[in-house]
Image (cartoon, rainbow, N blue to C red; front, side, top):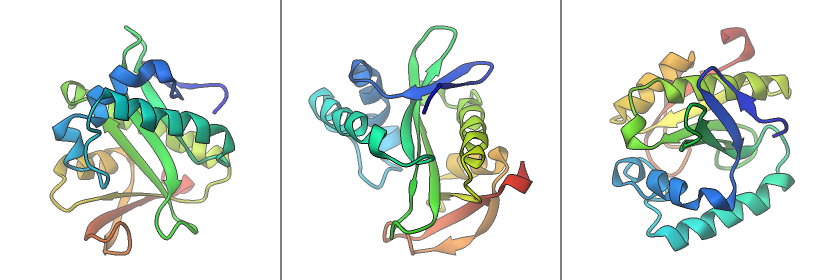
Length: 173
């Protein structure tokens, strides 16, 4: 993504290998990993390997697909990650997902960053965007609604588990 997106409080930019420790504080956190289909990243070395793959893949992804770091502007700290990717079976439905460091939960950062990324994705020609959440992931469900996404039902089509599905279209903004 060029240039990075910015909001009043946040900067959304490409990941860097310099973000390894900060990314591990997010993706290695048991509170975050509990909700991820991939589980927790085991250690800093594993996180570096994951980031290397993300950094290498990013230039080859066709917008709006990608993975980005969410940086708090006031102190420059990486506090989360966002991604836009095709949902399984990887043919047409784009998923927005967000992960934030647990100590930043409840600050509105997920909503703020996601809304900026959604606007950008729609400016790239995307016609609809989905978010999926486990039925007991109340935080993710509440965030999807705050973003402006509408609940469209439940499915086991994605990731082999029962999920709540939310959708947003440009006319919803």
